[in-house]
Amino acid sequence: MTAEPVPAVSFAGLHHRPGEPLLLPNAWDHASAAALAGRGFPAIGTTSLAVAAAVGLPDGRAATREHTVRLAQTLGSGPYLLSVDAENGFSDDPGEVAELARELWTAGAAGVNLEDGLGPAGRHAAKIAAVKAAVPGLFVNARTDTHWAGDGDERDTLRRLDAYQEAGADGVFVPGVTDPHRIAALVRHTAVPLNVLYSPAGPPLARLAGLGVRRVSLGSLLYRRALGAALDAVADIAAGHAPRGTTPSYADVDALGHSVSASRSANSTG
Image (tube, rainbow, N blue to C red; front, side):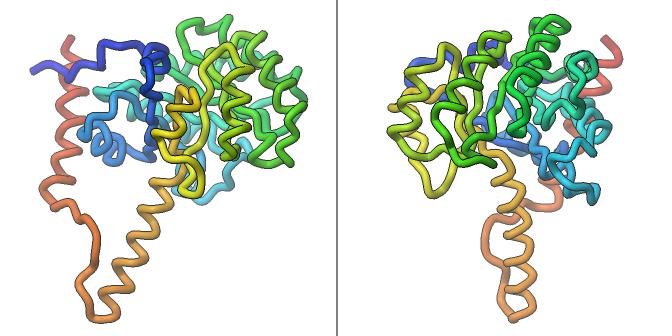
């Protein structure tokens, strides 16, 4: 028995397909990642909100380093390319962030997402440079939170993106920006692939592709939708109705566990 192959195209290569941005769904455990891979997605991301919520810890507070590494170890041998949401690297020390990057790379990750949290741009640039020096093959997606947690100041956004590109970032991420004109301006300004966060209230995927966006992440959307579907289902049952929506069978979900067991067994035997 052999493990399922990881897609032949590199993770970086998925960001450079003409007219086809990388649609990156974000998983939170083996079952969600395997189910998404089964729908043909060649790359899967993780979502820090789900990692934190699953263990009762706050998101974005550098509280889930070991949980994030453990999830990467679980997903890193899957038949897809893995990008890990690592918050701000869980440290202000570039050396410690570089060590995290080594652990994620060893676990099988092809990419990492590092956010600045609106902290000093120079400090975030130093983290990016340290990661690229330690693990040159790891795709570093440098995120700025100017639109996510700030007021969307255009000058500050561009200043930060410039610093992160100069530090060696392979891609830049501006979650929270949804205005097509601003997105187009960011595409024109950046020399590396631009990643935006999909918003149901923002441009659809085809429009984002037309604007030149190279990567569209779903962030915590799928996880939040899954929680919402669970609440809707129990409300339907309590009201005497059959629950609506898609319900995978017991056997289908159980088979997802068999797939990872087979893959790990094959990897351990050469």
